Image (cartoon, rainbow, N blue to C red; front, side, top):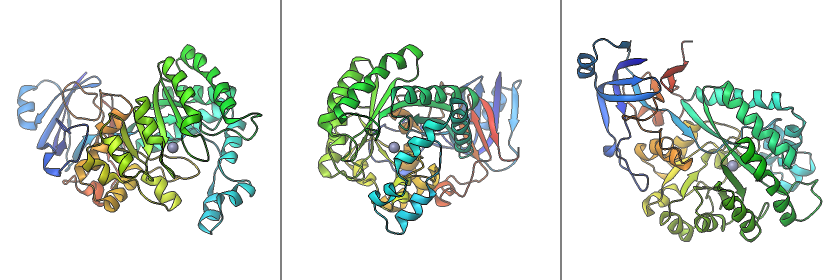
Length: 412
Ligand SMILES: [Zn+2]
């Protein structure tokens, strides 16, 4: 089915922008009075509306009556939305000055999420994922990475990954699963961290047989796994031909250097990265993923996004939506706040949540509005794209399209 959509006040294509390095707003291609010509799930042509209208007289038209800004739908490349339970009490305790250990002693912390998620059957966990994916969709996000990691044994991790796979069929959003069995050594595992990392390798053949994911993540931190502990696990993951992504440099460094060493697709967090890590990442093909909602949730430093971009790194921004450190789940709001704290251009913010985030997931078919890409786009009822970051998330999309279909409309 062919359709011509327009006229669009401003259409941002993200065409020809590089994967790495700083970007200025005058590098953005902005087509005024634009049309978007699509066939089934793909974009055939973007350009001047009048010219397209003359060229494609006989195709179905979706006529926009009001001012609209159109840009590629967003990609949230790092979330933990496969969870059950609620950590509002942890948040209150932390803000009132309680330590990590005091919160854990009060029955909170990640272990409470593990218990709630384990107690959830696959159907309920699926519903929770679909509900959260659909709320991200209303923000203009049509691709969402989802990690396991609150199961923390073979059976429960498989359950979580199956729930993500099933949820993918029940939402218009594309869900990209990742196995994060190496989130931490669970309290009920009888053995060392090394033994746990060996045990969870039992997941690899199951994941491959059921095609549950092609991505493996691990948490490199003093509270989780050291770079030395995780090396064998990642080498095994490599043998099974998984893409590797790492939680790196959140509180202490070493994760990002390991990400570069093992050729990870991304290194995520990086709040603690110093000049050394910034240079290592910039010289590599590893995408640096900033998670400002975690900085906001914990009240700690932001990822040095400005320095990463200036050094030449590729920067993506994601929500890290999880019940502990990043409960907000707001991509544009948190990215806009990172922009004020780190002095990022609109082009850098929008690149970080479109084609650069897609690249962090090794998806090359989305994130730009150009011929041959998926027709995943979002329309905002405004005549100026700058309002998106200026209003820091308060401007919500009026219409969201995925694979050439309108899947969300504010009026509906
Ligand atoms: Zn995370």
